[in-house]
Image (cartoon, rainbow, N blue to C red; front, top):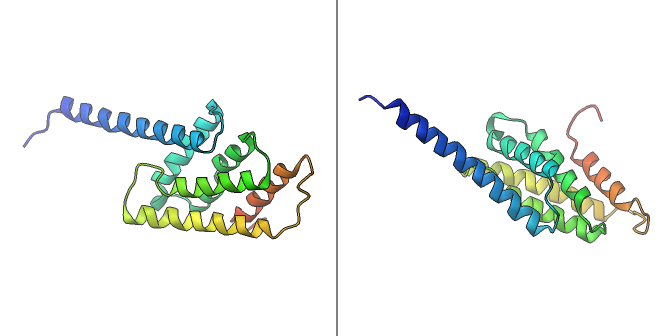
Length: 155
């Protein structure tokens, strides 16, 4: 049986287009959920996360756990209070469980594990004494979260 190369090329194009559309829809849904204005920088960062999640079984767990998209979305939020930062992080954890184009048992298990680790770090942050009236509070909170999620050995 011989497969027509034109049909194969059309099918590949359909898959790529569908995947790009899925990524765009997921991004738009998430920024709307967390009430953050979409920017090209956030969108580019999200596409990087999307690709990392899709290739996680062959990829780097630490890269997803400490991905820049989480920190960029937190910084982009117009709301800077702790409860708003926690809300965005909780939404992010729920979001990554279905983000990407993979929907296998292994994919869900991996994203659930990442989500649980981020949630655990956020709970630990609640126990810290931050000056919540400090103008730089949100930067300190985000920095502390980044530090706790950093899995590199050379901290």
